[in-house]
Image 1 (cartoon, rainbow, N blue to C red):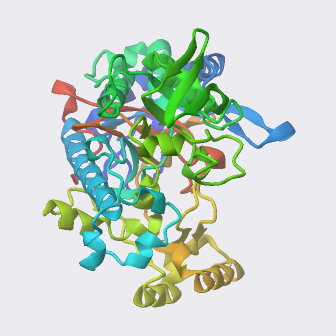
Image 2: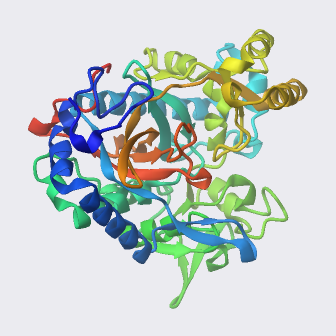
Image 3: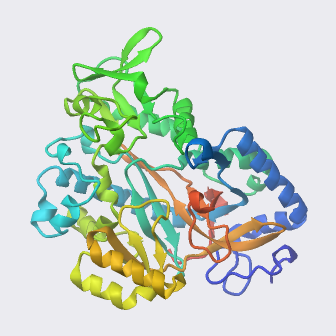
Amino acid sequence: MQPPLLAGYDPPGRDELLDEHGGVRGAYAHLARLFEQWGIAELRTRQDRAEAALLTSGVTFGLGAGDERVERIFPFDLIPRVIAAREWAQIERGLIQRVRALNAFLGDVYGERRALHDGVIPAEVVLGAPGYQPRMNGFRTPLGVYAHIVGTDLVRGADGRYVVLEDNLRTPSGVSYVLENRAVMLRVAPELFAAHDVAPVSDYPTRLRAALLAVRPPRATGTTTVVVLTPGMYNSAYFEHSFLAQQMGVELAEPSDLVVHDEVVYLRATSGLQRVDVVYRRIDDEYLDPLAFDPDSLVGVPGIFGAYQAGNVTLVNAPGAGVADDKLVFRWVPELIRYYLHEEPVLDAVPTLAAIVPEELAQIREHARDLVLKPANASGGAGIVIGAQASDEELRAALERIEAAPREWIAQPLQEFSTIPTIIGDRIAPRRADLRPYVITAAQSWVLPGALCRVALAEGSYIVNSSRGGGSKDTWVLTGASAADGGGGGC
């Protein structure tokens, strides 16, 4: 039976708070009792405090450009998402497996290309990907790692199982919100943690710094210098760049702060030029170095790619890693796991149709109304057409775009992913959410025991991106005695 605070809570499908009989699931039981004691007024008061704390701390992202640019907080919801230890253990195994396979794939793409020669994945899919960088051919990265930081988006399906929606291997963002969301929760609602063993997330910067030090160039000697390279304060993720640099105790550098002499990168410091060994770059490949990529780039460091290939600096993530998070390549990742690791995927992926494959293009034409049509290399939800919600004209126009450029499109069944409780005005309501855990890889991989939980705040919406009005939550990975039930089976 639903508590009074949940009166009118009516999930459209599978929900992580309520089970199929309308009862509160075990992991949320104590939270639900506390929220009942507080009432919606107290919940709203603490919610307002949390939002004020985030704004005061400068936890924002930028929207727009120039005079129209505004800084906004990532809308935050006080009710945490709860995941049981047994569920998280499977997520962790699946993510580490996936990152191992993707790094093996990247080493192969820029090496022998065995998977292409053996027909595991079509060569035109890989070599035609915008993220493919021919200049990386024949280059071996330190420890063989190309994707050091990976953010993989998951959704929990109607059957209760988590499935992979997409991988992010270029410059994955959002982890700063994971850390700040937890800090704010501990500040404004410490009582919620009293009866739960929640895995900490605060050691992420320490783990990241250790990984960056571990992949320094083999010829580096003495003290290793690491910098976080940001395009500058007008980048939408600038808060995160500065936050991670500060938390790791390393320099935050803009392109003008770095200079390359004789294929060595230096930081312009107050004491003079200081040699740089590792650059955690938050600038996309095409803008990274005007001498190697886009000559018109104003945010790159001339010569930095040459220094990288000379073995004098390590770039994290490696240029060219984006070929492995191309949404079209995503279609073949289960086969890549089997090919490189000789294992079955621990985590299933959302079934994907590639328009470049004639048989799958025919299926897209026939079933477009039941599919989500996605540009293969867009981000932030841009260009997505949800067949069930599109007008006939919109759907017809999308199919014409697909026919004209099949390499640029994929299609996936609309995922009826689970809802979670969210404060909406003066009530608690179910809203769809995804999950982005983060994996750090050097000699070994480590998964942050928490994740960015993004919520579609609009009723009925499937779009969780912050740029499209989504919000975020603290994610609790339970350990110990409190870990029994994190949202109801299926894993």
